[in-house]
Length: 364
Image (cartoon, rainbow, N blue to C red; front, top):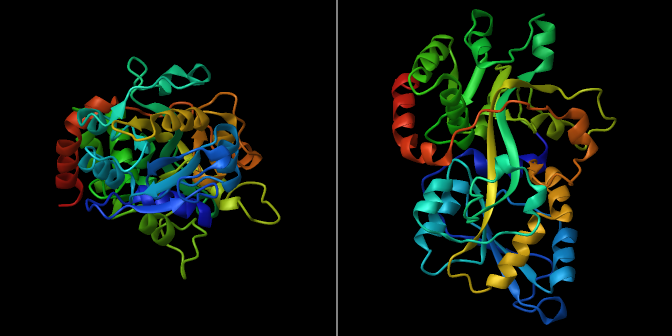
């Protein structure tokens, strides 16, 4: 898989429970607290998969006088947990990377100061999860879906699956690898997708059928995609033997970035009826030292410069309707018309018991 995508998704793929020390890195030519025009530093706390072009950070400094300092704290779950533990003395001014599976945890711990960002009028209402109070601002969205190896299905003259129901059919027996819901955010998202699809009374029956169809479970995305999936160009010594894997809808364009000449289609496809929508948010941390700088940064993150930079940096989709996707996304990316979702508060209330039930079915 493309190096940039690996950097962007591995941190989100393995949801470790530990809380490592936060790692800091400067941006936009950060030299202490001084920025362009004598402005101060604004500190962005995020997960390890946060990436942005230097030129974009420099544009923010040019527009506002603030220099950005980025503090990274592991995967999304780790970063949120660290923000909760340090909320009396926040590590920065803005937190980016809390998604809809973690949002209620952040709200329950009162992490954010409400702020209605400029530019929200260009953001669809269905991604504004906290529109009434504006504790967080949507920044990007993405879909976790089953990916398939086009060559395998062509060679075997078998149509690739397109739905959850397809995955339990006999012709797809022993073809799928997914991640552990207890240790991986894509794995959890895939489980949540099945709960949204089949309901709280029937999702366990679905997983019993999936297990009977010999689904393989591994700890995290890196192992699933780069070791077990037969369609990955991940630089491993030998390809895996699973032509189906739980990954990202952005995997197909990522597989062709940097390839010369560009192929007619990506070697991987997306089963568009197996997706779960993830939305990432930014919020002004309560107790932030630079509140005005934080507000300016959140506004900027909704602007076209930042929004149009994200796809090839973090392999996510912009939420600003005016932002254009790069051609590699429009040509090779999958269009997900009907992604599954669950309310953040419902996830928060049931997550632990759902994962426990899933483990008892699939891992025993």
